[in-house]
Image 1: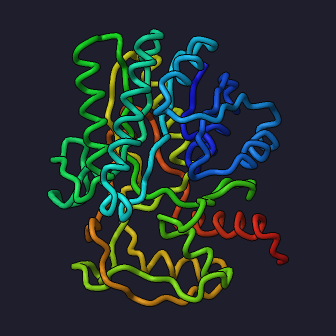
Image 2: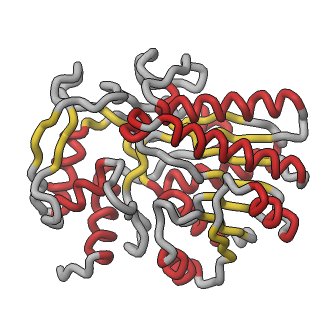
Length: 335
């Protein structure tokens, strides 16, 4: 039985679908701080089966202990955590408490219940601005923000845990910039409150819910002055988690792997591609750079190809098409 934390979030939801296809027994856990309970019924519609769900917080050790005692959990895919770079700069303690404190709680309860396999949601932010892309897994680590620092810290905790006891097996997945939506058009990136990522903003501007898109920074040392990122389809990210879980179950060996396309795309190019492939207008303005952002970030994905036999299948056009398909369904727009 696999426990999914942050299960009703953007990437967690898509990963549940892929797990269900392979008939894994799943327990979905979410505190609903940045997700909606209505997502559960949509997921059940897609996978055509009931999903066992618990509302709870990984910082609540008593709750976690009760959950592990009442279910035979063999591995955890750990998505739960806060993820807004800008907010982490303003409120670092919130991020250290939630991301680091919550994960330590989870690991302690796992250890107590002899559950020692975990697939961990890390991030490309661990590379900071020390390296020249494409970033390799053995690149130096340094974060420009508390969010990234929380990921570096948790990766190190998992490494130390595995070094201290061979029964601990982990996969730390450093993914880059997930966008897109499920091919059904039924689930996509639908955060509560103000979005943290660019694609929900693009959608809101295309829907005319926001007048213009703010592109943060047009004076970077890049071809068009805007930041370059490695955008990857959320379904490809979900598949990466499946391959990582299969790997640690088969080989009982810990891994740290990038999940990206290996191709950089500027923010401005993403906006123009979305507008072109979907025939919608996305007005934009340039705004000052955000604290904690870097100019360019994209992955070297050769290790994921080599050891996980994983490659992303979707290009940037498909990511934009699937996002708009979901948005039209979600907001009941007529063609």
